[in-house]
Image (cartoon, rainbow, N blue to C red; front, side, top):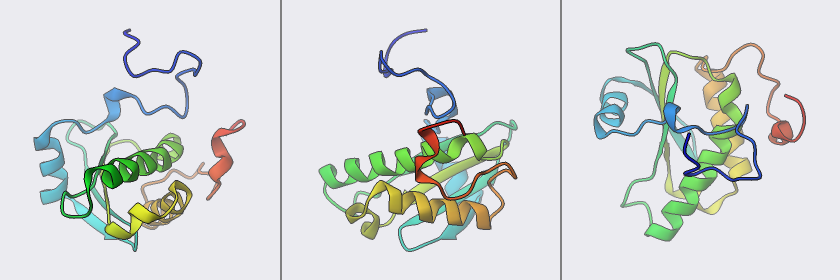
Amino acid sequence: MSGRGLCPGRPRGLFSFPREIRLKSGWEFDFVFRTGRRSCGELVRLFFVDSPDETLKVGVTVGKRVAKAARRVRGRRCAREALRRLLPWTKKGVWLAVSLRERALSVTARDIYWEMALLMEKNGLLTDQWPGENWEVDQGDP
C-alpha cells in the first residue's frame, strides 16, 4: 500500500475516507446525478442511487458557478469531513453524491454535518446503529 494521501501519525480505521469508496469517474457522478433520487436542504443536496455492484461509493461536488476556487475547495473539505463522520453508519449498496449550495460555503463543517445527517436519516441511508447527531463521534469509541 502506498503512503499517498495518508497521514503517518493517523491510523487508517473506522473514520477514514479511503480512495476505494470515492466516486472518481465522471460517468459515476453522471450516473448518480441523472438516474438517482435527490433530497435538498438549505446547505446541501444529496443525490443517491442503488449501486450496480452493491458497494458504497461517495463523492462531493461544488459547482463552478457557486464561488471562486478557494471557497469551493474549503467547502469540499468541510463536506468531506462531515461525510467522513457519517460513513461508518451509511448503508452499503448506495452511490451517494453530495453537492454544496452557495450558503454552505460560509458555515462550519459541523453545520454541514447536521444537515447531511438529517437528510440521510430522512431518506433511510443510515443504519439502525447510528448513534445520532454527535459531532464528537470520532473522538472516542463509536
